Image: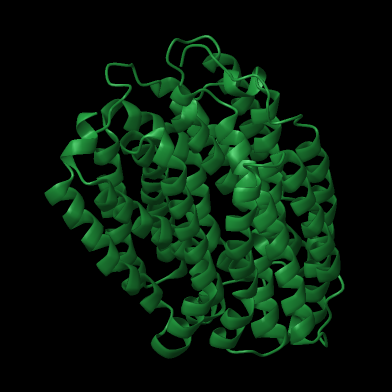
Length: 466
């Protein structure tokens, strides 16, 4: 393959490692800084949550169309453009003068993140042969977990000593390095679907429907939100019908309709992220508002979950090569249920050690679920579908994260409304947090059944045209 000889694989892997670290870091580090941002801009609890959700929403809805566009126009072009968008918006976010301005910029930054996430694993798949690809993808996944692990800790330190704007400034040098190396040394485009017609009508319907559903979901129980979310669901049904009738769909529905393993593994991933992502958001508020901890100390405590997750994920990934990923993933999700049940018992007088144990349990379960489940998804499709499978996993992750924040924000809205969060409303906040975790317990139990229902990993491999 000429691409392999033109550009050193390690250089490409280095670029993907940096971007795989920075994107989750930008997504998660901001959670610990939300109280400081809220104080500066006088934002409500709901408005504050949108600083995190705007990034997730745009990343989630743009990932599939931009991933397909990269296959047609060139993955390097989309990867480079995404990094440019992230770097420029990081500078602008650091200079933001209002909450509205910051939320808008975070939405644009999410589009850049979708460009990078939608191409990173696909580029690695293009340059690494099958015998080395798993190891390279494993290193990439580890860098994602390291980004998630360090986000609360570094975000807390940066917020406390340099202010929340420093979180965005810190990522700029990394972005500039990636842009410079890509422009100077990467010559390939990796446009495996060059010549295919881009499904613009399908992409527009997908973007509008996903945006309407997610935005509406996050604003429930308002009447307009119910209409918006319902309209989004109808739009997604129309999209699914359309995609099955055209030659070059932006999203291959056959991967779901004819592959039980692929479909249920992705459903399990969606539920898993929907029940775990908002934990950091809620506990960041709990530690700082209810227990009076500094951003730094809150970050040090919250690092427990992703660190445990990163340690367990590498082990469970290796185990999934020997044992049925369905059993490992389902057991992991069962452990998460236990951790979530313990989180429902938190009070304003709970000890830090109790919370740390809870976070370790959730992190252990997540790590045990994630790698085997991803392995099951990637192993359930034919090689020519690896890129689509990768984009689907990313979409499930981001959609799940968005739904998690949507549920948490909805419950906060019901209990506190648009009032700024403070110790004055501690009883209302504790009730909202307990309710949210109880909902997560129920959803996670459903996720265990979805994980078990997928069948054995040795299912038939999907085939057909793309």
